[in-house]
Length: 523
View 1 (cartoon, one colour):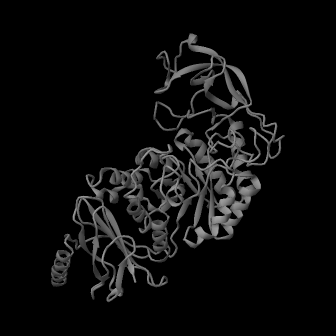
View 2: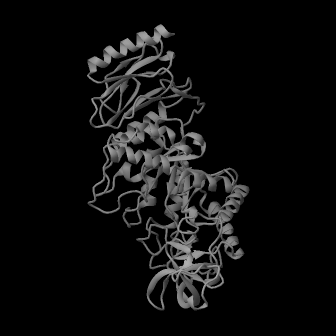
View 3: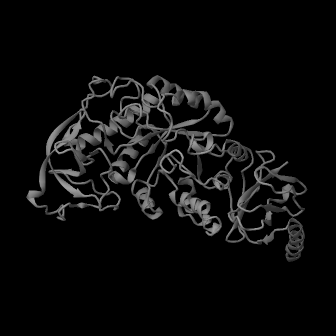
């Protein structure tokens, strides 16, 4: 065995010298076994700047077969319920029962289309074998129809456990309570009690961010109310996020949201949920809500957006039953750091993301989404490392990767389309990225991994190298792909690496250029 490694090292050195780059060899990669024969791949089918032309649902119908052919197994659709009008991306959450069916807020369709078009898109995706996940926000309501006069405390935005005068909520000064005019009346007259006759008023909310009486903004906690416990600790208590905040200690609110979840799942036929902004919502509520949905509909897919440190996020996950998938913000941040620092960060830290490596079966990895995208036209954004970042999440066995609409289709003036490169990587994921994985940490700038392939997927197997340093001279790295591939010729379908012949021991000498990635598959 030692002689084999020595001979291979000499061979790599010679070939690497001819290529003009550094030579790397690692005898003991980290090995992960995998029995997956289907690679799950999610697609976020919207972006924040999508035109308010009510066309998204029909575009989904048009694209569903194309995405299925690329190997997409699920789509995450934006909030389908009525917000403040056709410009509302859905997170304004006016009427959860209006999916573009009723004349409310000056429009029948939502920003994305009508109820029938939404249901048609879901049906078409599912017909093509793609599961559909609905984005929901159960934190607040916006665009109320009327106001109520209530007494409230004006709070410190940086510490919602104190009033603006510095008093604790445990012992506020009576003079701190002021009458405000709060937008918290929701009667949904345009819907006229269809699906639900529940009406909302100030008793169903903890607070608001606007006093119509004085035309002033702030964070106002209603008299007799308290922020929901068991939430994140950011800003003292981040229960309040925007608009009229649900009181999750009110049994009427909880029961209505339980009933709505059952109605929505049955009415639309969706396969799962993306839960928005869960760190602002009581953990007790979501523990019970998720449990009720699973009891009613079985083992449905649910992914939560808990935008915080991984340890805090995992605490939420365990508290709510260790069931949900979680978006991996730590990994997304590390990949973003590789893009921004251009070789000054240690690329090996990508292998250290806690959620990604310790709980891969509950991780959803992503490069960009509607919250992280640059939303202002004309603002530059670095994209030269975006394809290598996607190579990291699309060719490995850990996590469920999510492709962003804006990266695939482009956003005029904001993001260039990466469609050509993503089509290649998606095909690699669909056809080649299977089997045992070996992770190689060659240097601060270069990492690699291989997949051996599986018998049920002919010609499967892949070798990937990433180099985040623009100032390096490139490199040649020896990696093991399995002795069943001996004698095969592998080509780089993403970078500029030369073709590689796999030796009798299952090793190949793979090259990568500066600030690039190479993805090798069998010719």
